[in-house]
Length: 294
Image 1 (cartoon, rainbow, N blue to C red):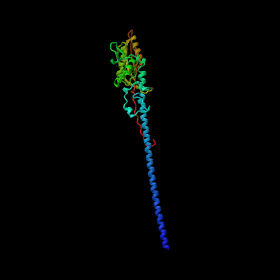
Image 2 (cartoon, one colour):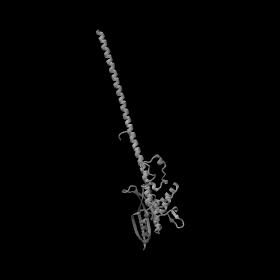
Image 3 (cartoon, rainbow, N blue to C red):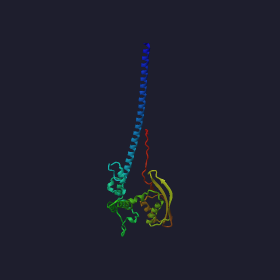
Image 4 (tube, one colour):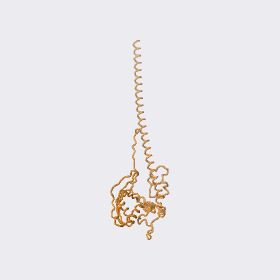
């Protein structure tokens, strides 16, 4: 009887031990599953966060790119008013866009306001044969005539030619003459030589110093020095200096030495500064998107 009771007790003890083992295994299994689930959730959360950041930066880049295209007037404004679609960019042709289609853009303001500026158009510039409207009289195109040619353009090729004509023969031509986008010492000396020629005097010596300084006040503005000498009578010297002062291209005389040369002549040796701007470009930027908190 006692032995039978012992057997029953041992059997119960074994069953309890097995149940504990099953319970422990179940807890371990559940813990492992929970750990894997937490790890997967953390991984998926980081991936979703990274993808969201990457998409947000991509959208910002597309938006910035669209702003540049729209504000400059390279393409017509996007239909949704914000960003261009791939189809709109594919069909974008700057030479086929009329001014009325890019209202508010830099290009529209230049063509409507700057190119038609009467004061700038009054500046006497040497024009090419393409800018002569009447070959017999030598009369050049007025901006009104150039604008009519642009508006009457029937296709993209005619529009491109009309746009080039405006850039070459209107007040737009004066802008790069007044402030070039490159050092170009040959053009600088040619400009100064032309001022001497229209003053009725042939220069004896003009030379660039080769020295260029960057402005500390205006970013991108550069100062290039040039030396010249004048040996003429008082009236001619005064006329030359007056024409230099009235020139569309700025010449600032930094130093000058004047000597009498005979009874009525003057000898002037001077150093002057002319200016040019760095070429305007669109700077590309890169941004790295990481999966961390940075």
